[in-house]
Image (cartoon, rainbow, N blue to C red):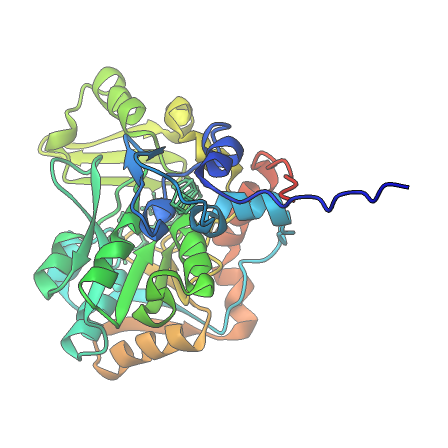
Length: 352
Ligand SMILES: Cc1cc2nc3c(=O)[nH]c(=O)nc-3n(C[C@H](O)[C@H](O)[C@H](O)COP(=O)(O)OP(=O)(O)OC[C@H]3O[C@@H](n4cnc5c(N)ncnc54)[C@H](O)[C@@H]3O)c2cc1C
Ligand code: SF4
Ligand code: SF4
Ligand code: SF4
């Protein structure tokens, strides 16, 4: 009887990432694969990861990708939960000049400014813009001005994690990373893989709530064709109560989110994480006044970052006792549950 040959394990490579994630439209342009490639042969071009050199089949891009992992492991999400919570707060920054330039209560910007001024972090991965708010640009902020300039939400796809390489090259070792749930998810994979030294370089993962991001070209078309606005005139974009709001020199224009559905990024249709469940601290606005934030502290690291700001009296916040959590989080729970229930299923893959 002839012995059956042992099955040869396929080596993970860019072709696999392309076949299982990019080509079928599951990619969310988070930027993680570009950052972890040891031979720098992945380049995110027009928000799509491309192979621009010879792949050495190390598998790092495949292992870091949140969508590949979700397809492989098929994690179960609890529709009725926002993930781990150790403390809950609502409120805003005490600094009026921060609140004026921030998206909501300026808590994210204030936590970063405070941590940097106290020497608790040496840099922050944030998202600014060059031309207009629909063109997000990841920035490794090395000073308070860079942090302040990056305030406010950008609603189009953002390859923020491409900046992880700059963190390594600049030898920064106490970095706060601000990201959407998908960024935080891929970053968590990089930390677990100890890739780029992310495990000791990243001190805090600050997650933002997120219902969806938009394709910049399609979103721009909606703004110009349906609303007659020019993106470079916008000083703020916001999304609340079922509408998008665009603030420009002539005031505020709004449109129903439903009417922007065609611009929703394809990869976001598979997303089940609303509240950045893998972050140390998650921050959003739903359920509170427009100029305030909801703050979910999830880990000891998140608590340290927040307590440092409390100690310096830079936050005007109210601690929510546990028996009131479900009341304060009712709107967030509703959005999270809708997101989990309506996300398209990611088909499983066999990798061996
Ligand atoms: C695409 C998107 C969708 C969102 N959807 C919701 C929602 O449905 N419900 C809700 O309650 N909140 C949502 N938020 C979060 C909300 O808009 C605010 O970011 C949050 O309340 C923090 O407010 P703040 O005043 O503390 O922020 P700020 O102090 O203004 O700081 C904002 C920080 O966010 C970073 N940032 C901006 N845009 C991006 C981006 N695209 N990717 C990564 N980082 C970015 C900036 O670098 C800055 O550090 C969303 C944010 C984004 C970017
Ligand atoms: S070398 Fe490694 S990280 Fe780079 S493309 Fe190939 S498998 Fe991906
Ligand atoms: S989701 Fe992120 S890690 Fe995965 S292929 Fe897209 S950019 Fe790369
Ligand atoms: S909906 Fe999900 S995948 Fe899309 S930007 Fe938000 S967190 Fe990322």
